[in-house]
Length: 246
Ligand SMILES: Nc1ncnc2c1ncn2[C@@H]1O[C@H](COP(=O)(O)OP(=O)(O)OP(=O)(O)O)[C@@H](O)[C@H]1O
Ligand SMILES: [Mg+2]
Image 1 (tube, helix red, strand yellow):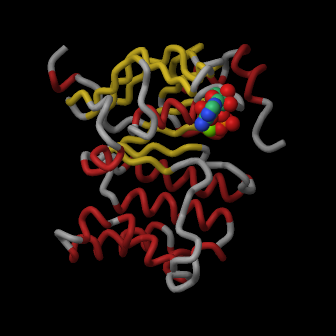
Image 2 (image 1 turned 90 degrees about the horizontal axis):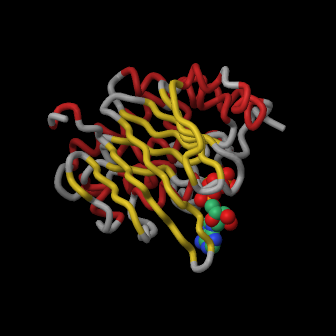
């Protein structure tokens, strides 16, 4: 394999444990430059743990994470962000008592110190992508609706200038119409060249926009393939595709 063929993210035989809990037993996955890849799986399957292992929030007990050509398995989380590996965490984790704009400035922090004009441009780009955030720029982030908070969490992630944006449970607690709007934004970003890894319990949503997908069950990758094929796979259908919003 030549270096230009190498995936942007290459996760090999990852294992994550919390004490006696074997949350991830064997997970290998790749994201190529420009791809939108989904990771689907039921509650407790190990999806968030895989993401935490990738971005250095938990230390894997075994396996490798290679990002952008460099083994980065034991790098601390802030170094991953500086190298362009950015996660929007499950539950969004915005700063509720700060304004929308201050949250965006914090997202641009790594560049803010060095390149203030670029950071300001990044914030303007976020407002173009999500005009609603511009309308609410001086409002406390905690007073936003769930959908607006997810917009803010995504915009904040984008302000870190990612090469790969990983999003954990985009749809959590959101109405279907809002989820569909957010998926459209992700699709637009992907068409503009951003690589995305989307983790989603509601598989139909994720498979609707992804090119490829992985199915996680009990801490292992149970299936992988083209998103359109998995969406028509009777086993996957039976396990997940009844699910959009219960
Ligand atoms: N901090 C922790 N300490 C102990 N066990 C944990 C911890 N975090 C997760 N687990 C366990 O690890 C397993 C995988 O959890 P994980 O959160 O990765 O799953 P998930 O697929 O993201 O689930 P969900 O769809 O509910 O977000 C579960 O059995 C969970 O209970
Ligand atoms: Mg999770």
